[in-house]
Each structure stands twice: as C-alpha cells, then as structure tokens.
Length: 93
Image (cartoon, rainbow, N blue to C red; front, side):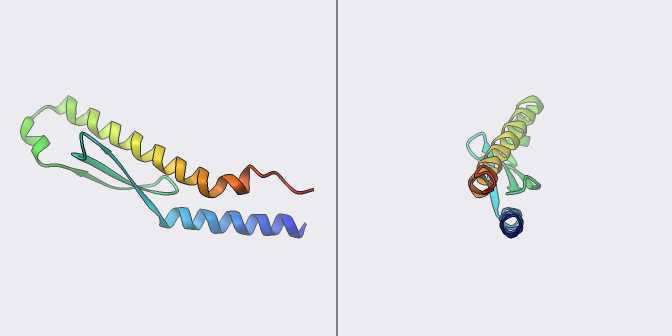
C-alpha cells in the first residue's frame, strides 16, 4: 500500500511539472506559433502580421491547424517522457 501511495505522489509531482513546462508548435517556417503547456492546454497563438497581408484565409487556417497539431504532438511527447516510467512500469505487487 505504501508503494502505491508513493507512486501516486510521483505521478502528481510529474503532472505538476508538466503543467509548468511549455512547448511551441509552429508552421510556415515559424510564421504561426502556438504555445502549449505540458498538460496540453493552449497558452497562446502568435501569427506573423505578414500572413494577413497575403489575404489567403485558407492558407492561414491550414497553418494554424498545423501549428496546433505540432504543439500537441510535442506536449504528448513531453508527457510520455515524464509520465511513461511511472505509468508504464506496472505495479510492483
């Protein structure tokens, strides 16, 4: 039982660390950037003003979507690195 409590404590600490860290997803050579916390919450979106001048709404939408997907992928990778050893190790009993 004590091992289970220790595992729960480690999981909580890892989740808190994830919430404090950030990753940046980008598209269009950095013209669109989306910042996510490690627990997959969107923190901000930055769009290069030059994209608005081009007036291609569909391209801008595609770039935003690509940046979001990229950011979520990075957040998932970070979570797997931090939580993987705790979640995938199985219970010791």
